[in-house]
Length: 322
Ligand SMILES: [Zn+2]
Image (cartoon, rainbow, N blue to C red; front, side, top):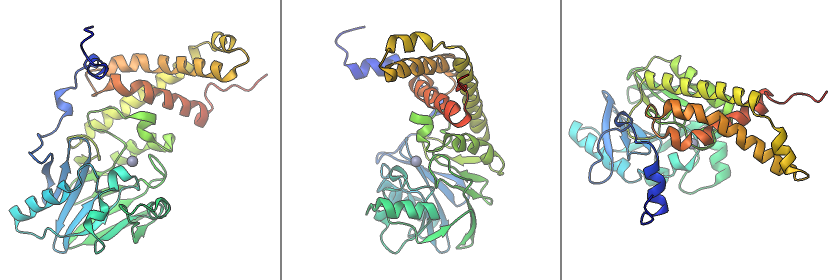
């Protein structure tokens, strides 16, 4: 290893190459790509985040407003509206969940826009009190069918998952589903099982997504749309990781770690659980490198937290003292 390279360069170049199929369309000079999902439903990406919008007779309905896309959201809408001779006015903004990285450009659309979200999204945004993300006035609890400007979409909350409020948006007339922060098409999840507040709830969402009829998944992340095959590949990855975690909990002997920790029980716990996490990740990382992008970057972290959920939510590897 050359000592002229910076630490960051060395780390990135040591990771496996990203499969070409995990990338989406090239970005334009302003740093975004906008494309048609189907008919008058569009998606926009900066390569890392995604939003979607529907052009209607009553103006544009925007779905999420990631700050990283920011002012490029309106630029993308202007481009499509001009090409099709329809209104570019964002009249409605629908939130998938309360997180700032998907909603922090909300205030760019002013005070006249009608904001729509789950009742828990409203509660959390009132709590967070962020001027960039006004709370939605229009809410729903479990399901709500929306009809705006002659277009139809369905909002549904299937229980807590990535966040307590994270909801899916089905577009039955556009063969599309927007489900954010669950499946990253072509890529593995990130830290703490994709930053999930409720890991068992998170693990159930891909199967829920597949109960809906759709062809295109707007996943909120990375540079391309997803397919049903992407969701199924994600499910295989997570179930392989779960099987590996159970095997690691069955086979890693805690004794040497607790002996080494001595009176410092936290040192013993850390040594043991890190060893179980490493044993969980190793075979899955190998199997999915070259299949899912960044399998070698995030599988150790995802594997660790999945293993913790299996212990704490399922009680696996926690025998009762005799
Ligand atoms: Zn989120």
